[in-house]
Length: 278
View 1 (cartoon, rainbow, N blue to C red):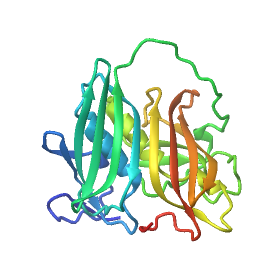
View 2: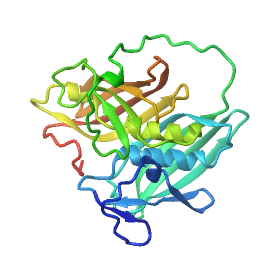
View 3: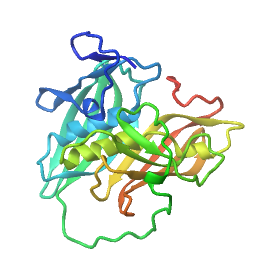
């Protein structure tokens, strides 16, 4: 897809951006940032992009030793990838170990996404995983497949827990560009990845189907490099009232649980997961 250099209108068709371009934010003023990557897209702005950028904006306002441990976001309006997004950060609290931030993402004077996030200084204590991670084929033995809408992300598809699903609910993924040794950047790339696909694709679509995301939450348990393989695993949980809800996990090849996430989407008659209206 063609891209445009922000603020110049210069056509850069053929120059493929990377996830680092997604995370290139311009600081306009204290606690005020603007996205710089613009491109044409027939679908509304990808939610994982705006969530990753919002988390980065929030992270730039906290001390370097405080890393994100959770985010909770609401998708309020459709965004446009060809327009810059403004991110305004509110510093709710800076305590002894935790910092809380709220971010709104704005296009055309309207809020398209709002997010609460929390950052913490890593503390002492036990490190224990209760649930075993899925046993799957290692990525090096698997064929590649395309992850739609994501820049510089590779994917491998193992055997599926829901073979009839129209989209994979379990896959390996990694960034194809080298990422800096900055845990905040890796957390933002994880957030970027966490919104792709849907665990609800495993459900029958005879009467209704998953639609646009309503809200999304991520808990960051342990650091993982996103320029190495991670396994994304999504599980459908329930559908009611025109909404569907699923949970997911992101683990390393060594079985370390890096993050957990959950999402609620519309689940109504008519199948078009990227339709702009709700």
